Length: 146
Image (cartoon, rainbow, N blue to C red; front, side):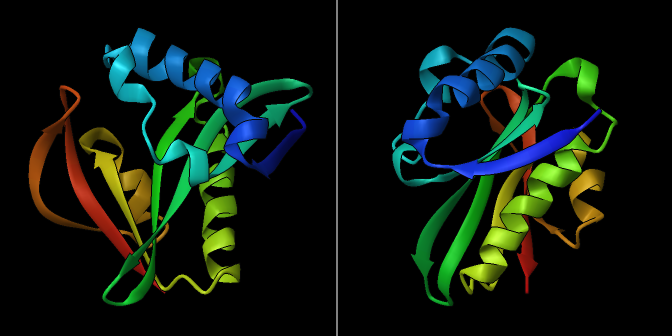
């Protein structure tokens, strides 16, 4: 499988990104459709993974301002079921971590579904705080400092 990951604006990414998010979060995981799109999509950087011409995964990077300067928040990471376990998520996350590095972002946060915490730990993310419910799914905050 020849995989390409592109970083796009919401304007250029929305059809593919929303298609993946709808299939994974809304249809597969039961997240309410009105919770899936939010005010952060418009200004986020969206990573899209393509196998040939098919979009098979997505994730986004939102840049926030905090006490430590710019903070990157990675989220909405989703890979179609039949492509999981093939390195697609690693490439999506890697592309967003590279974007953070090139933008001088020193602190990266995410809300991880509890079942995928080990995936993020491979990249150096550290779980913090208690488990909480987000969209009916157990999550835990994670942080990475560069």
